[in-house]
Length: 426
Image 1: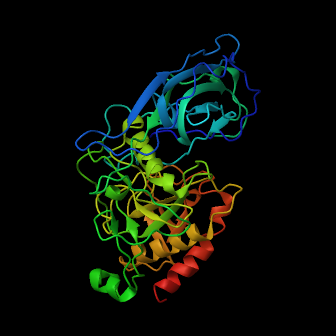
Image 2: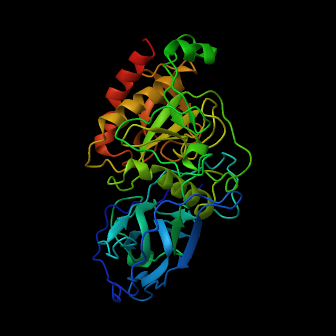
Image 3: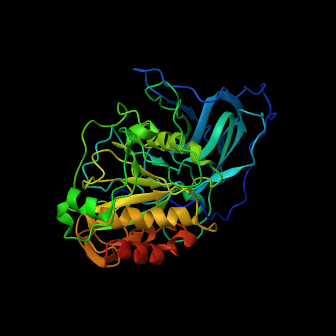
């Protein structure tokens, strides 16, 4: 069985600093502003740069990294290594240089987001061995990067300090720099963005599914047994500019959706909602090109303005198998709230949209959003084959040993269940 990815949030060893090169090795490049994607050409790109590797033979302590350098513009960064069975016991940190003003950020730790992965027997098609990886970090447009990785610290399995012989870094360490590409163009050739502090206004084209009343929803989805919540507006993959040529052409489906697992993306909370399409294209590209998954892992995304986005392809009303809760990707849907909610409160708009989305998605399958259900484990936190009782709206941590979706968002799930059940007329 694939070993879980290690947590980078608690590391007991002192950080070994790599030699810091001059911060500004090249003049800052002016921000060109939004561009329209040329029709027929791929949007975005991924650059992979190997990290210098020192296993620290003889001392048990080694450092790995990339000196400060100028690179092609990117907006998202992550660290990847060859084998997901080999955990990264240590801390990976990056600092980046902004395109607009040439300023370098401080060091930021890349957290490993454990349990966001295809199940062992899920049939997730990959090209070769499944790599290990950190969660991606959205940086905004940047053209400079520096990386340091220091091994050692608490064991990801026991929490105790690892032995010196175990403090080796995994092979194939590399930094992945993702350029999300330009904004998709509408028929007039103008770039589209999602502005404002609330859910965007409905559109009449195929970039979104319009909101439906409860009566319209029940007519559209008669299988919900009369308890389907009203469908909220959902921005489609076309709406956020997904390049469908990146993913596997087919989708995998499971049985009817029985539960929703709520996540956070462990990315920065200071994003503007107009940046969300770029963030989604970056995460999508990272999951597919860097992690070798068939598609983006989550079924849905919610931003802090309350906008809801289609994630993995295959139909928002269908039971598309995701790669979001290792061990419980079957008969479930995964919803990721953009941001980190360990110590920051989620916005009321995001919490409200979680309620609307789960009321609808669970409701069209006849599932009580305030109830419970039983799922069969594919292994990890619970033994393979074990039947486990869950709330129908659960947090990622309920199905996997992780802090996700953060303490503050997890504490709001009771409110989400109550509101969602009310929307279902229960």
